[in-house]
Image 1 (cartoon, rainbow, N blue to C red):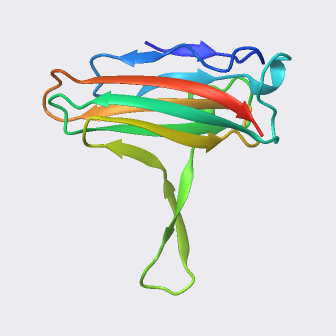
Image 2 (image 1 turned 45 degrees about the vertical axis):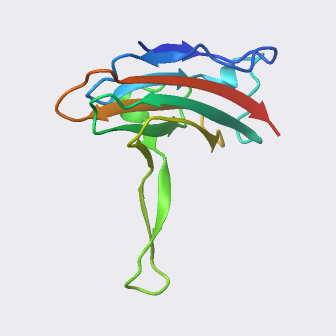
Amino acid sequence: MLYTITYPSSIEQAKEYDGNPVPLTETDAVVIKPVSQDPTSAATIGGNSQGTLFINFQKGSLTNVVIRMYGSYLPNPTDNDWYEETIEKDDTTTLGLVTLGGQQITLTNDCKYTYHFPIGAFQAYKITVQGTGSSNTGSSLKLNVALRIN
């Protein structure tokens, strides 16, 4: 179930996403928007705002779960206005060459993790989830997101 959330400064944690069972297609789990249009938001565009993702995953019969993060420069983006977060990947065969690739968090075992991410210049931010495997028995994924200002 998808929850669209805003963050008043007095409330730092969003409602929990409960994927039980974990979806087998990429599914929006959490959407933070519009960051700049909420006067009570803890986040500020271009400021030192960052989020913390709290992950509680039970693997069950899945092979793994993939979590992806996307941002948009628009306050109310359509499906085509999201940009996947990237990570630099060193090319070990060419000195000085760095390539960009989509960032994803892949979990292969039961875990309770945290992951910190910047809000940066994004007007909106979303987190998606996708389980992989031929069956999906006993899997669950709970996500909590909190904002923090440096």
